Length: 442
Ligand code: GLU
Ligand code: MG
Image (cartoon, rainbow, N blue to C red; front, side, top):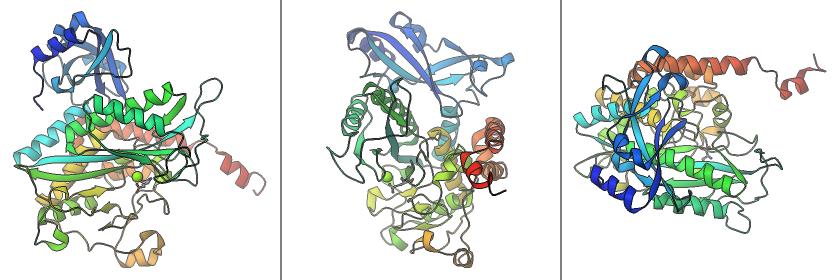
């Protein structure tokens, strides 16, 4: 942070012949929003004078307090590489402020900043490296998305089997141009499924980077006549889209999760953080897995977690400790899916981990075996509980979790209410499966 100052931005707009600046922010449900201003307005934009009507955004401000202001984060200035290079378009990621100059409680970026501040006061910097999975599907003659793919590739395959290779490459190049460091990209297990891993960075930049990534993937797929989706489980019987979150706490450039002499070379802090995550994983599930469809991914057999357990290498566990130690020591949380709002997920994970540290929790023993293969009796014997099996159960668990509710602040209640409504809407649907199963049998 601290790369650009005001004069730098004014100069960049001028030198690069930028015509439009998109002032971007994210709503509480993880939807990216923006308002474009012309280059002549850049001074006002940098002074935080660009307004929005918050009441027009789903579950955002109330009508009587709807005027809000966008305060851009200067370091997020980037030129959108996929827009025309004559008359360029730049973007600035913004915080949302109330007219009285206070940060807006329903702004997820503000929610994350608040939690990061708490960590900072304890001397911790929270680092995050996300692994992002998505599908590229074909569109029909009218340009509507389908769930078809002509790609028959699998894990780590390459062209000509991999038909999304060039889109994935374009995304990685666009991200690099925008200052987002890409660590790796590859074809994933399911046909038409891809993964891009971003280099770890501080959590706020990581969440901003994920929003940039999603926009780049959607836009470049569309340019190539494909439809990109972050839907958690678009195809029954195939792997779903995870967003594994690799986390660590740093102080003075040192990774505090590493301890050469510790059990598994993990520090006590890391173990308490893991215990905190396990303790609140049910409570933050409505955030990590925010839609009805999320719960169709959290089933045995597809390397997505279902049980509250941790392990060193086992991909069936909720938390895994990837091999690197030293500076690269990290805790990988495997439940989040790419439909989540990354700002809220990072805030909740950090609050959960810090709660484990504050209460000096001890994690249960790491599990070595394949959890999918264990019977319910074996799971019960080891005291291993399940993640919520539906959005409904997740919302209930969230409402009962004081740490998660407090991390979200006043907007937690609205978030839960909206998610419950989404569940109620789903609950009353009659699916094809039900008709096939019961129409003649009942
Ligand atoms: N696609 C799997 C999931 O749903 C993860 C596969 C992997 O280990 O990368 O989380
Ligand atoms: Mg993967």
